[in-house]
Image (cartoon, rainbow, N blue to C red):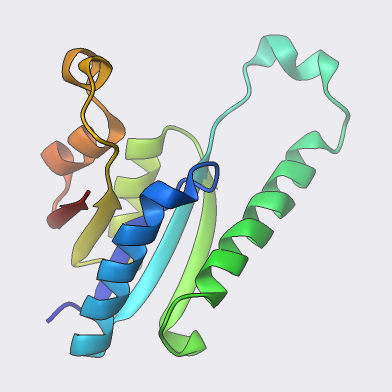
Length: 140
């Protein structure tokens, strides 16, 4: 089975991620694999930097890590088989880079229901599927 399964998480929309986490946890449990959760924070545009407090970035990082750790604690696997990381940048680039870095052999990603905007503009899930070096399972 799979040794390391990477699951991108949107902590602002956990309902989309829950089915993907559940499927990935079941797969990891069946194959004695590990689960790696990743959340990617967006980069704040430079033009807004003068309007935010000096500790804004550290606070956002800490809050994201806490939210992701809470989600990781709810995964039905032993603690030593679940890890998480918060990254900063563009979602698809950081997810693909994390897959390389952690040696993931599968990416399990939750997907929104298709809408006109995703057909016209594409989505992070679509880009991850196209450019991943490993298999990608999209869970609706």
